[in-house]
Length: 320
Image (cartoon, rainbow, N blue to C red; front, side):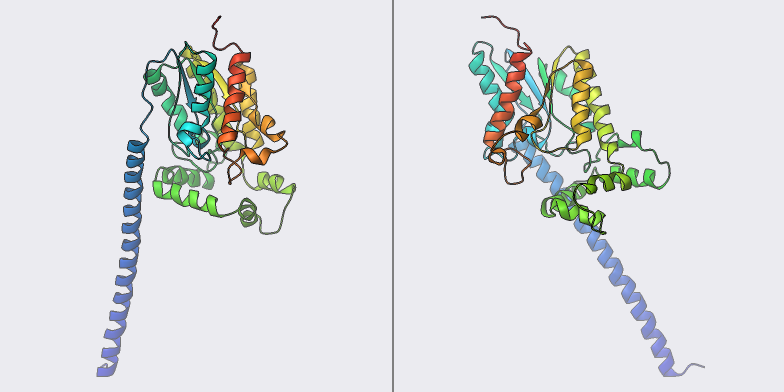
């Protein structure tokens, strides 16, 4: 028979084991509860954001332009994004040039969107606003935001990567995941991100080549290619004029050439903002602190480039 001490010891061990399981369960459920609360809070904040920045009101202007994009279309980087972003500045330029036309520029005030999300909304935009011209400047967010992404259409592997992509697309619909990604990409410098993926010390011009060997970055341009082509076809089917606008900041080469190729193939204007901004003698003066989003002067130049394209291509065909 067990001695009294051994019986007490066994009971104590069982109690400690159950106590550990109980504490671990409480910890796990506590983390789940916090994540759920954070997700609900972010969705509530999104609701409040949409109340503060409601969709533009259709004033039945004489000429309507819808600007498709994300943060660079919204105006992030300007001291007053709504009034100093490129859509409003473009609207002012056109109203000054054509005072009797009464031009209005619309845009979806959602940041961080990928091309698939925008493509899904386009038909609704056209029905709601009935634009005469649509400006497409999108694709920069495809590589980090997989919410509703068409990326699974282009995945070559049918094994582990397929499962990983499906999980990524599923997680991408949650605000918490987007928040963590935004925080990470905001606080971690570009070079350190590469060092995380390539700890062996690969640097300089060999970085992108090494990245392509390890990761299929082309897939994000494939998604952009698919989605932007779909946007162009939707516009043409609805007899809406189109301009494809390049980003003013540095972008992935595949996206840049995808935009140019689609514009050439469909014979629509392409505004090469990257080339224009790159050749500025004082380029840094046109960007905000993140060196990606323009400031108000940068958005003025961006609007001016699109304005010039509209005039050069006779998109607004009015004779005075």
